[in-house]
Length: 151
Image (cartoon, rainbow, N blue to C red; front, side):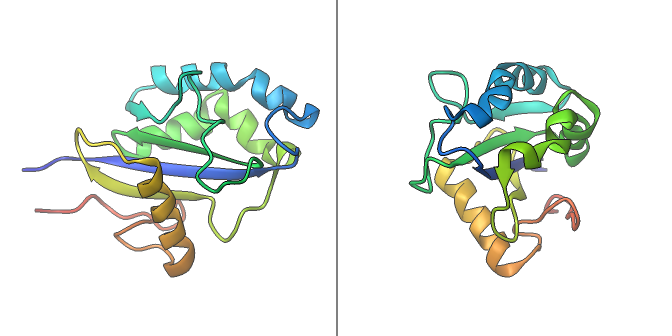
């Protein structure tokens, strides 16, 4: 029987002109801490990152105001625990201090076979699909969740 893991992408459009804008300083100053908490969290599997140990320099939208995060988790529950029950939740609550609204959806979730990892383009395509079609077993959000595929 094949087992699945949860992939996720979340994106944000910064209020600052880029990641080095002074308005982004507190957010940037805490990135390493939040990433370390994620990586040490139960259920964390993988995250997309560059040589500087983060993803803020990745630019799939060719827009330096947009940053992305792509990660893989063992389950929805483990991702939700990290998001809402750790230091990360402080930044989630304060999101409007640093970020503008981005489209109809800024987080997309989908199931992938265990041991696989999404490419940046696959993650962007999943978010685009969710924005255009709404939640389904193909890609979904936290408001309308779907179970992993059954064999």
